[in-house]
Image (cartoon, rainbow, N blue to C red; front, top):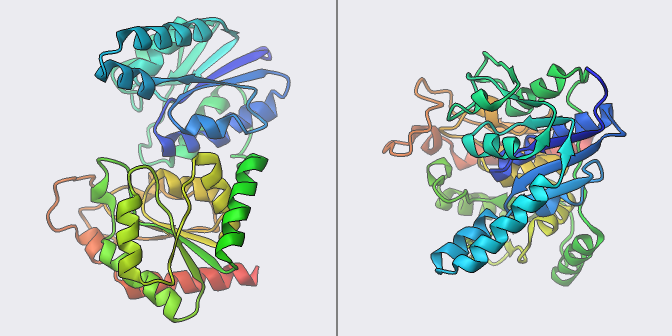
Length: 354
């Protein structure tokens, strides 16, 4: 195909899935450096994308703000925001529109834009029959292919002959300064272990038990392995404070952060420990070694990508399953604190050795 002058990449959500699309989008820019690259996204992750040098423009669908206005009965505001978004979306014209999301909403957005060619996943991966909207479909028979590798299938379909590029996400100077001030104020020194025991709303079934995180923090502190910072996001501060109380006063509660500030914090820690979440992928793309605790979800599809990371899981016949109503949760209850602590120590020793 001819060299495109303008490309629109679509991956709206969720946080982790957007992050796992970043390497494929970076590959596009590296292969077509003169093409104007735009990303259509929704949610707080858009704040992060605006600071990445390989993305020329970010269009943000204000779904949360529109929904909030609708709930409050403010139809004027909801209508105004929708019109403003659609005007911006329709204002561009693209040689290539690449839908990495593959749902009916993303497919409809791709059709609202002036584009010469729309490419997305075929019916094996596409949902809600979104593949019917595309000019060309990219098939993937292996449903357990890691999402970063899966996303690279779309650039390769158009001739981007590359391996997955290395990515280290950038945070803006003001975010870096904010975290510098926090670390100075709290006298935080290396080694630093960031622990995130939380998961997104509706994903509590993926969590290792809070009591075990508390014991892990106590052990890391008592054995002088390093300083522990408990990470938390919107709506999680109360639970994070309870974890700190369980874990002991030596544990440090992180400051409040937006996404770029959280990235800046992750740049400064020696290791990240947590479950299958978007924050786990953010840590990996910050270049921070990750120790991921996996239960019912598929580590082959969603695990932290790269050789420096480690995954703890139980190899059970019923896993992966994504059964939110499982009462036994053997895939998580079978993971002991001693096992996780041993992996923390081994991974840290490996990091120091390098």
